[in-house]
Structures are given as structure tokens and as C-alpha cells.
Image (cartoon, rainbow, N blue to C red; front, side, top):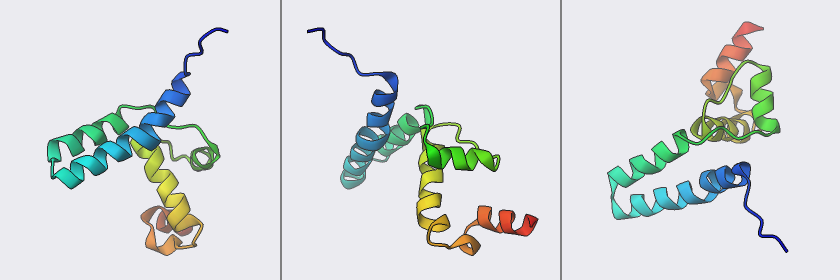
Length: 99
């Protein structure tokens, strides 16, 4: 058998969904602000995810520039759009105001 190397997308996904949250939580619990900042920097230097939620945002001309943006947009979709709490969201205000 030949050893398999993880692809870039898998590595990025692990950084976004496992490494950064654990690192940030550890830094937070230790009160280590510079380490918290490093966790955020790592998230912002990782490419944005590609999934159906982010495709929906792109359809209305909102683009994630990095993994930090993509996580924020996923959070908005899950906690505001699906609830629906549009009027509590500045993006929702702008979209509703255009109609």
C-alpha cells in the first residue's frame, strides 16, 4: 500500500474546525491574549471554506476572503437567517431595505 497524504482542503478544514478553536480556548483559559491573537491570525491566514452556505452568500455578492470570514458568514446563516432574526442583523436590514 502507498501512504496517503491529506489534501490541502482537509488540512485547512482541520485548522478551521479543530486547531484554531482548541488553541483559542486554551489561550482564553490561560488568559494569554497574544496566543488568542495568534489563533485569530491563523484563521485569517487560512483560505475560506467552500460549501453551499458560502455559495449562497456569494449569490448575493457577499464573499468570504478567508476562513475567519467564512466562519462568520456560517454563524450568521445558522443563528440569524435560519431563526429568522433578519431584523437583528445589519446585513438583513440592508437586504430587506433594498426590496
